Length: 274
Image (cartoon, rainbow, N blue to C red):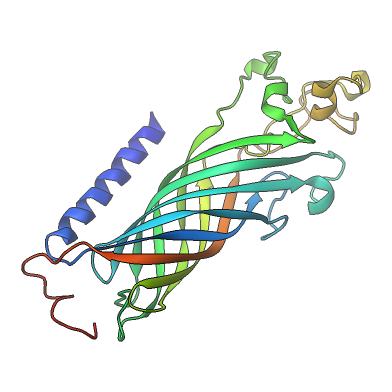
């Protein structure tokens, strides 16, 4: 499976980085909370940043391998939303959705400057990051689970379509800024983009499967498929060639734990003002 191969390669890279740096560095662990907002880019919002941003929160753990390299594990809970009537993209569709999301990612961070939480000298740095993660989502509209309805003919087997998976691999990447508040507390501001491999986070991807003139307004599945009731089968409903994206922007506050100093450590050791 292609996603499985991606995960194996990235996991191997992370293990190699930990192995290479872990032998010669004093490692520290930072654990804390994060909060901010999430928004989505896709068929119902083709390109407006921060549109319909929703609150998000989670937990984070950073294993600092040295003053430049960090491996971070985070778990995020939030929501994303899209609405044709708000984005002005294709108001003639009248489609909308909202989805609770769970986002679990592992990334490698690279600090542009030497950085150590608690340092009086190396106390701030911009950074970049990239890695791999898992997304769980469930698109709804007016409290109705859209996947169960088969809004593009999945339940009817239209054009060979089947239900999409609501657990997907994502590639997170982005930029941030770290600042040491005191000897134990670290602060970070981060903007992270998630590249996905699905076009169904918003339940919109391919074509209509019903004749709008024959839709029964009292049939939830049919009216959710084409709320305006004016489209034809095989008429474009979305763009399957453009996969969905989502973004988290927020802050984290972490507390540092020392994991011990290895022999031969020279970068961190014996310097009170590092």
